[in-house]
Image 1 (cartoon, helix red, strand yellow):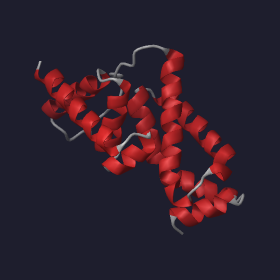
Image 2: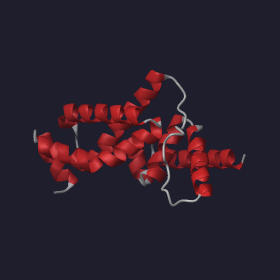
Image 3: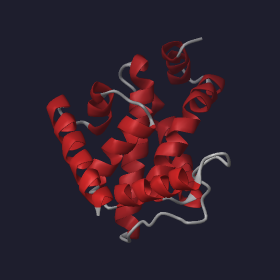
Image 4: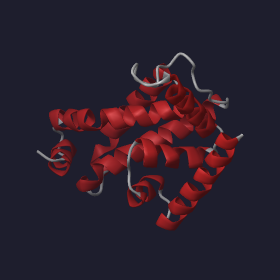
Length: 170
């Protein structure tokens, strides 16, 4: 059964269909929340909040084929609320194993530098970079999720990459 069929059933009150939709999306949702918070506990809390909000408002989903975009938008709003509520800087946790054991020390150091550089970006740039390069979403998908015009997303990607290049050259 595809996402659209599951979303139709979920809107009709089928809890199993809703659970299946969450199972399909949980990894990308968790990764997005984690890239935003750099904290497992907070990421799981945001994910719980997102699932609760989606469950409560599933009947408001206008087009079932856009369930993935719709729930990602709920997650991003939850991340933004989290950031605004905490009003603190998010630092990359040094306790997180971000690489596989077989990767070289240079690669691990490079990834750590990249994550630190991403943390320096404005929130809107950070989220777009996470969605584009960590979640492999297309520019139109990001535009739908972020509710920005496609041209704005392209501009933000360009500006964010330029800032990352500058940050990583230092």
